[in-house]
Each structure stands twice: as C-alpha cells, then as structure tokens.
Image 1 (cartoon, rainbow, N blue to C red):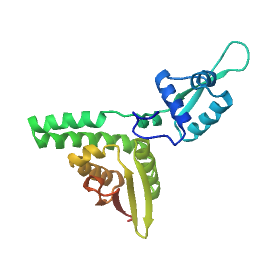
Image 2: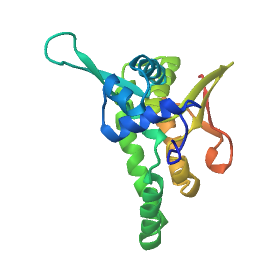
Image 3: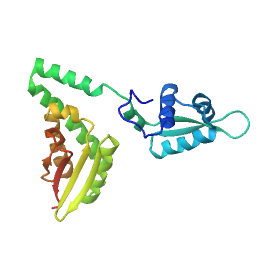
Image 4: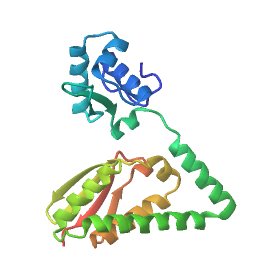
Length: 214
C-alpha cells in the first residue's frame, strides 16, 4: 500500500492503509476507518495507538450530539515525511538557474542571507542560555524541530555535535556554500572556534562539528 511513499511505517499493512486513508480524507473517526478497512473498531484503535506512539497520528474531540464526544484522527506534520515530495529538486532547479545566469557569487549571497536569518531565529531561542552545555542542548532541540537528527557527545575538553540526518543534504551535496555557512552559523551562535570533522556532503555518514569546551 505504500508503493508511492518514501518509507514504510512498519511491516503492518493495516497501519499503512490507515495512514493512506487519513492522508486522503484529512481526518477520520475510528468507526469510519473500521468500515473502509473492514476490521473491528477495537482493532483500528490498537493500530492508532501504535501510530500515535510513533508520532504519526494525533486526534481531536468531535461532539456527536448528546453523550460522550467522539474523536477524529489525523496525521501529524511528522507523517509528511512518509510521502514523496519534489522540494529538493525544485530548490536545486532554482539555484542552478541563479548560478548559470547570475554567477556563483549570487548563490553565496543567498546562503549568507539565509544564515543571517537563521542566526536571528536561533539566537532568540538561545537568549537565556549561558552554560555551553545548555546552549548545545537547546541548539539540538532547535535543529531537531527543523528535521535534523542530532546527537551531542562530550569527551574531555571537547564537544561533538553529530548530525545523522540533514534535511538539505541534497542541496548541500551540490552547493557547498550551504555547509560553509552552516559552520559559520554555529561559530557565531556558540561563540567558539567550531570546526567540522566530516560532512555528509562529502560522503560521510554524518556531519560532525567539534566544539571546544573553553
């Protein structure tokens, strides 16, 4: 059932069907799902609980006249990643046109503008953090809210910020300006001489940023 998705939820075809129906209809009750998928409401409820634990499904109350309210189940924003999109190719196409018609310097300025905007956004979220450890944990939360998969490791006088997933990795693999400005962004946010040990854009399995403790 997930032939057109980027990834499968799990090996359970019923859950895959639930996701597809919720995607198509915007939101459905347990009874509605039970009828269209042809399994008992109790069975649907158990699958919805499993999907909710994965962060893919949420629900809102819907009153049905007199009596207890029912619930309408719908997909969360996290479930968008299960479906294909052409955002990367769209952005890459625009950047290639700019590079070909206006030159590489314009591309660098674009990523520079983006870095400045991110600095403003991130700085506001880090404003109350003074301890480096707290800053890094807060930065981890910000990045993960934007689609990154991040781990912070500490070894002696050095911290490592590891990014196992980057939502702009396809763009960065062709336009390394993205990586360069990301490094500069971290230096300015953390106020340390951050260095990059490895990069997914260069074929590594993760991006690793080294951050001195002092």
